[in-house]
Image 1 (cartoon, rainbow, N blue to C red):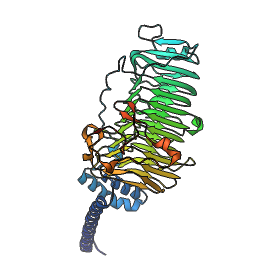
Image 2: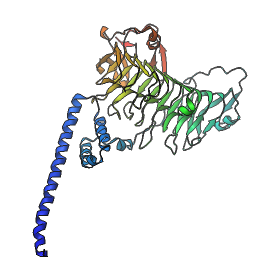
Image 3: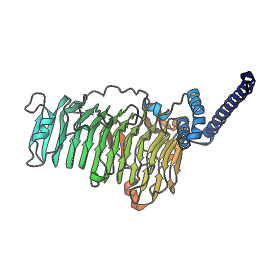
Length: 481
């Protein structure tokens, strides 16, 4: 073949390449149209958000590299057209963390409890004799009391080695600013293998190289928190796991957790590992960055009379998650999901597989509000739970309950936001309720004592006892009549 014949051969090749390009373009446009049609149909027949639907497609494509190479440009185009970036891209978006609220003064903090007989009291204050909290951690003995004078303490981080200790802010809250330092590369305070009672302490701005910088790292024993604030940490409070924590217990009362954030990944306000028991009462969790307001792997969980609201500006995924099951009693809580949530599911159990025997979820007398107009899932339970009971809950807004385990429902009601007094201001009391929203007594005698509300949440970070038996479904008995 001579060079004179080459131009004649190149012309058909060019035409074939052109046809292939047109075919690929037609395929891409067809896939784009089909994808948009499927998304539209999904909106009509599913409670999933747009981000969840696109995320599901991304996860499936990851298992098929060849298909992904063709479909990913289509997905990128759809995300750009709908202004719906992928989860990893969203996690890198900035989240505004405002300054913490003013430090609480005398009269705004939890009252001190009497010290045990014979306990020595150590005082930390800017004027001495102990000026640094870390110095008190070195000298305090088992059973002593450490009192920290109200004020701001910077880079004063420590590990507490005692077997029994009471630590409390006095004359107001003691505010601890990490300012770039954490003990053992973990947290402002590390609590390990003791019985600790901590009150009136603020933990602000902890960061660590492993991105798990916490206000407190709890690594065994018994820990009770009262009147504490966790603000702007990578993780609010983080515990250890099953290997060292099988008998550990954590109790949180009248405390606030907010604005946990790690750029590029999740920040949980409260992350509890595989401990024996978690109790949270009368506390306020809000504004998490991509992570959850509460995530607990504990064997026994009591979540009662709290406010778990992500609110505008928040970026939380689940509001409440029990990824490994266990027993969870969730009573009298205000739970809210904001528009544009990272995950349309609000309460979840078993998503990472059940590791505890006898896993059960009891959801009773909660007010659960979905502010996302695209819909959502109030409750999602994976197969494997022994019992799932939802009773006397008030579900507000668009959404559904999804349980692959048998779901028992008794006395639940679902309404729109007009049934509430001022939902835009988080006043979720009922507005002129009628008999259709009346409370139904818990029929199971073995559960009635645990699932009948005795208190209700009062903002901020408090509870009030109910004088009379409950009259209405949901978390609040006070009404606007």
